[in-house]
Amino acid sequence: MLETLEHIDQELLLLINSFHSPFFDQVMWVISDSKFGIPFYLFFYYLAYRFYGFKTATLIIFAGGLAVALADLSSKHLFKDVFMRYRPSHNLDIKKQIHLVYNYTGGKYGFVSSHSANMFAIATTLGLFFYQKNKKIILYLFAWAGLIAYSRMYLGVHYPSDIFVGGILGGTIGCIIYYFSYKYIIKK
Image 1 (cartoon, rainbow, N blue to C red):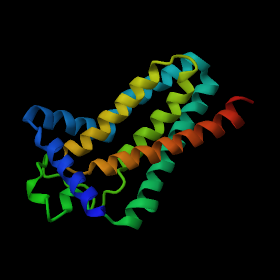
Image 2 (image 1 turned 90 degrees about the vertical axis):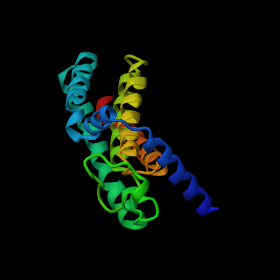
Image 3 (image 1 turned 135 degrees about the vertical axis):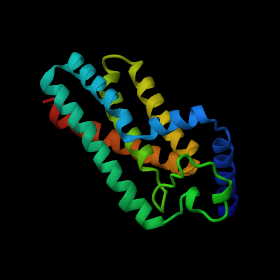
């Protein structure tokens, strides 16, 4: 059963990774870069400020940052260091079949995706705060997180299961951070 799931994971990754072109190599490389999010973070801060004012906006952005920090630490220390599952770009069985951009292979282990965990943590945290003011924003936040997660598969450095479980981890952390920050900080 586990071998069948791993085979499906590999085949799905190879399918996603096979749809590449020089143009999309550049696009996905930029999307996957951590600096790609900076304009979005500034925009989210502006939205929080517009919806809630300076003091609460600062607390909301702090909550989002805390969610990302916890997601990042959890993905590394509770998953990558424990499961030690090779990234597709390090898996000798499929490494030669993967299209790599700039020969980027990422770290040795990839379960779970820190990019996915981090982006879904902040998307969930901010989305829950913004949902009260504008319900459509949560769709844009999750589309943004999903695009970044997809870029990691496109680049051949994460399996779909790395992305999926990373998204669940980040979403869970985002819900917890939202709950406590709203209940004990924002509401008071």
